[in-house]
Length: 405
Ligand SMILES: Cc1cc2nc3c(=O)[nH]c(=O)nc-3n(C[C@H](O)[C@H](O)[C@H](O)COP(=O)(O)OP(=O)(O)OC[C@H]3O[C@@H](n4cnc5c(N)ncnc54)[C@H](O)[C@@H]3O)c2cc1C
Image (cartoon, rainbow, N blue to C red; front, side):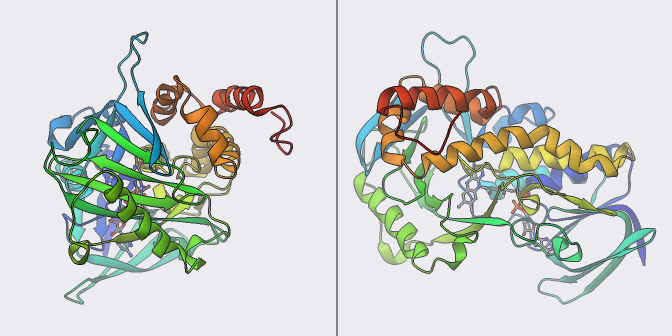
């Protein structure tokens, strides 16, 4: 049996960042990935440009397809408002990067390989068995059926929303699961609505209950999607009607913006999103959970890539520092207060979306604030009080009786 310092299960952003950092520090690392890379990942592929801080050795040109500086907001595909991320009065330019996940994840996996991690793709982790001085991981070739068994001092569960590592622990027994769907659609710039441009992201709030739709511009295509980010029940997958609603929203969005398509040729991909639901333990013994496997998706926006990357780095540092007992505390110090405040805002936003659209989203500073929140330059803890004051002023003191900020 082979021995490693760390086995990282899953080669998405969280796993590849953790593997790179650990290998760079001189540890013996195996990075196991179920699919053959590059692989499709159901995702919008939008992320704040502060991702550069996490990937300083990589040139953005290797994976960034569009640099978005405007958001076109709509309510039921009408009442459009074009918000600037960088109003004239602001000094610091902020933007959102749009990537194709197969390319982005492949670049990150190659980086982990460059730093010395052993990448094995096309191999699915089947079981994780903790022992007193290590963890046994058994995996199987996705198509070949070949067996892989190895022992590690630590295991990082970076295997996403449907991962298996968590099953070897008592962690995350009641996750909150949202659901989103997307298509990648070829596009020629200049066709369709005049606001279909590489520097504009589109967001639609009235068409999906307790969620939103989006159109994100990529190099030669559009990523069009919709998600219910604050589901009625703990698990949105139990809502049988939801996939059809999300699909319809995507079609309606294409119609609204004059995007031409052949309905039979469209490939819809749906995937669960484990949303932050409050503080919980994220390590047990020698197993650490990161990214989606740890439920680190922002409950208001539904974004998870930056948080996956940050948590992968925190897990690696905790192992390098021999401070794995501190891992959950370190994650909570980074995310908990901010995500708790985002959850409070999400409760309001997805219940009174119409009023929030009228008095919040269309507020001239809102797009800048949203970008700052995505970048982490403004905290939800600071924003929540301000947003509530504005809504109470606009809608009336007693409109949100259950929430006193
Ligand atoms: C429709 C949709 C749109 C989204 N849009 C955005 C967006 O625009 N911006 C944003 O920030 N976030 C977005 N997200 C969320 C984002 O995709 C995730 O938060 C992010 O991918 C989490 O990264 P991760 O590394 O934790 O997990 P993942 O990216 O899911 O990676 C997990 C990896 O583990 C592998 N794996 C799974 N099981 C096993 C196994 N048994 N053995 C080995 N490997 C395994 C998987 O194949 C996968 O490669 C979106 C999500 C959805 C569903």
